[in-house]
Amino acid sequence: MNKKAAVDLSVNILVIIIISIIILAAGITLLYKFISGSEDIKAQLDERTRLELEELLVDQGKRVAVALNTAIVPREENHIFGLGILNIGGLPSNSFTIEIIPTKLVTSNNEIITDPAYLDSVKGWLLYNQDPIELVENEHRSEAVLVKVPSNAQLGEHIFDLKVYNSGELYGNLQKFYVNVK
Image 1 (cartoon, helix red, strand yellow):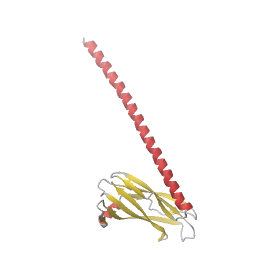
Image 2: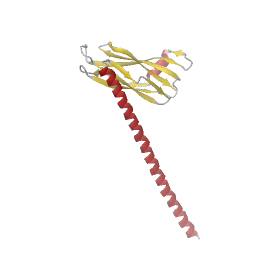
Image 3: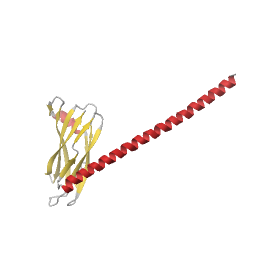
Image 4: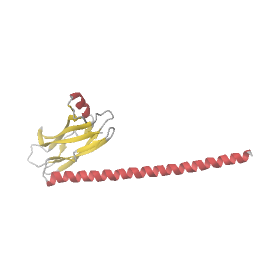
């Protein structure tokens, strides 16, 4: 009787191992489909942002443009804004620099917060190219501005001023973008 129990136990373990391998393979396949689907959505968004920037810069002749300048971003998530710069020529230099400054927070109670300490901490949310950008005359370039909202961010609409400089002078108009933390 013990030999039969030992064989039954071995068969049961073998069946459990086979089922586990099948479930693992199904999970990996499902994960791969989710990842590839999210990459397709990101590519479509990037293409939409690129087209919007190209229309603003090239077709409308704007020097500086922010495409899709408002985003709802939950805590612990991030969002990428697209910034476009067009060198119209006749400038002192072909070198451009970007500066982004958080200006205020409008809470859900319509309270306006301009506390410099808090706004300084909001600067840490931003990741963008702070090096000089070289553009020849009539060239345009898109730059990404990543906003990563931390878990302790205050809820409400955070307003950012985006400025592009050429030889220390403001180039184009001041641009604003809005991050609604939910």
